[in-house]
Length: 240
Image: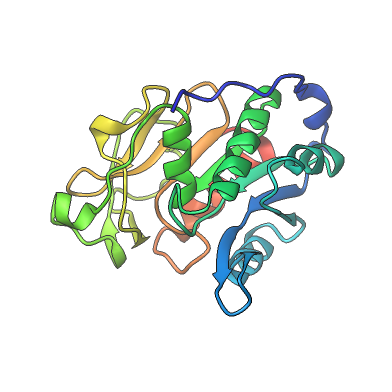
């Protein structure tokens, strides 16, 4: 896939207008669930997300984004969304409607400089859209379990995250079977965290407010203090 380009006609100034310096509306993408009994697909969002955002940013308004590629940009504009979370759930290619919706969200966000946080699948999608690749079956490739696990992170020294990370022994939760290897990261991102065996756990764009993390901040994790600082700085302030 060719790397994404900004959506034509996007304007940053209007979308980045903030009340008291902060736009409190955060858009979040949803997974697709196929209900075989009713022969239909349904968009869904884990309740963990609403509870987590309410806990760490009590004045934020979390806006679920329906997987409709033809209308999602109108939603972002109409509701004046100030930042976007590309959430977890399902794999790239499993539900094309979601893939296309998130691709359009990313293109639009690039054009108006909207902050983007990619979580688990969301991080993987960012890497694919920016020209990187995905490794399927991490446990087999790296002999390292990333499904329902806790593991430590190896942190890069020269990153803007150092001031947010208060420990050299940070650990995170892990719920993914596919992942990104260092040799397959888009050349537009800089890696700031890896697992002990080299699976990429966190990256950022050096010129845009874009961060990808492989772990789940909305689920209980030893990384909770860092996650709160990251999300508040990225989605509320548009910077790290």
